[in-house]
Image 1 (tube, helix red, strand yellow):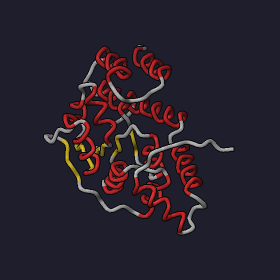
Image 2 (cartoon, helix red, strand yellow):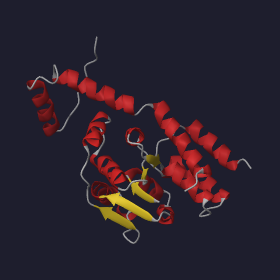
Image 3 (cartoon, one colour):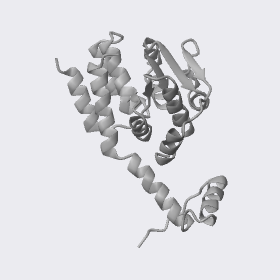
Length: 65
Length: 160
């Protein structure tokens, strides 16, 4: 069971989303928004952010350039 | 080394009063979209005396696909396109998705903390100054970092 939320989105963004749905690339705007959020969360995971910062420390302290 | 910077490091270094640290890089390129974004939010972070505003370069189909996959912003996209154009350059960004995209494209990337620590390695700052800057991150900047991770970094810098 999903959770219903209320959000204000730019009109142009919604038009583009609706076009994708109308053209058959997504089942519904709800489905498309959930997929977009899932992709965003996947690419901004806490463990990834931490790994990149640890890479930073390595480069900063012991890098060659 | 050419560096191409996203908005994050420019803003965070300026929040710490340390934007001059970037002068140590031979070339600092700022994509047009990033330049415009920083002009709006933090114009003091842009120093035309050593930063070059660069027009967008055409984006390969590989970059287009990766940019969409990681939902990159316009500035991050342009920065990666510049990195592809200037082979061997380094991307400066604090955005996780942009760093993931850079990794997929085999582009080296670093963030604000890396730049601060490099400054110590390169003799721009001593250890005391670097520790003070790291400790100021939570209160003086909009850079998000878990407090326990920052404490570990501070301990590593403090250790002899």
